[in-house]
Image (cartoon, rainbow, N blue to C red; front, top):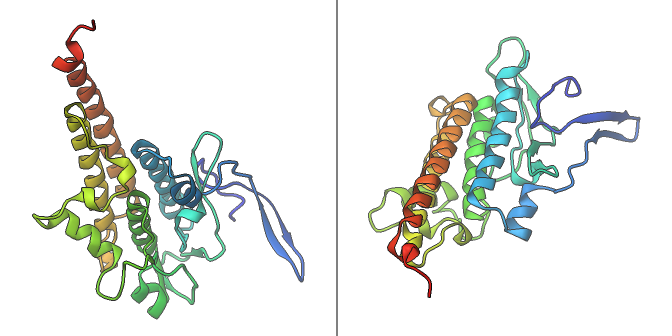
Length: 262
């Protein structure tokens, strides 16, 4: 079935091997490696690149959830399962624990070994409840990780504080700012000429983090669908690019730029 699905953001399955003592899938090679590598080894992705990768990954999940005859739940969305091709287009991979929702079911119950920190423990870990809204929750956590460069299992998150609470406080408390939790490489703070651009970047990341928190609602019924996630991300990207054009115009007309050179 996986070999029959077709989407530009899903890893292509070329062939398979099914022997008594060896089973494997042959996948298309992704030369740029995983998103996890780019986050923690290279750390050279800007805001727009990270946003594009998120749109690619969620487009793949939207197809799995709503675009195929049988809904497919990935069950293990994380940066290491998002692979990048030569053009930095993201492809969702690793369907080792994916589940099918057949017979019109919106939820199924099974034993699954998903990644700690990415899943909702009460749903997957304790009850074994698998649904498309579980993937939505995992995406929310991944989005937080992408823009903070903090794993949900980071040692700073103990029993009293998790990554969701950390992000939520940065958005609602009057004495806290999103600047303090996002990857420091994403927000440039410096001269007067950079102020408008800094605000633009901060507003974009704040919108993404609010979306991530919505995806991570405790109750599955309160979470939005992956269709809504994709639509919201595209709106955020459109605004980010539009604001970039406006900021560029302001900078070109700034007195410091307009003054003649000697």
